[in-house]
Figure (cartoon, one colour):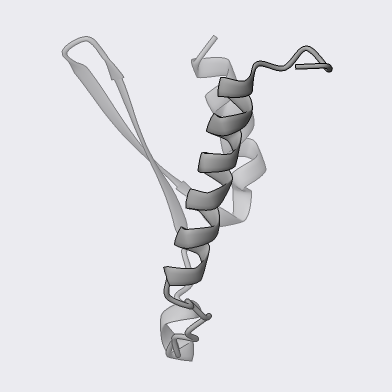
Length: 81
């Protein structure tokens, strides 16, 4: 009260702190579990970009070679203007 804090508020803070300590003690310890991955699954090579554009009822699908992805980005910027 001398610091302008209501006693009810201090009681609420103490109760919440006590709850956090209780849950921290009873919470199960979770550790990192590594998952082995096959190397073949990670090395699949993407050879083309596929983009689907929709405007109302019209749908256009574009396939672009991955080797020229920068040109595809420039083209897409122009189309979406």
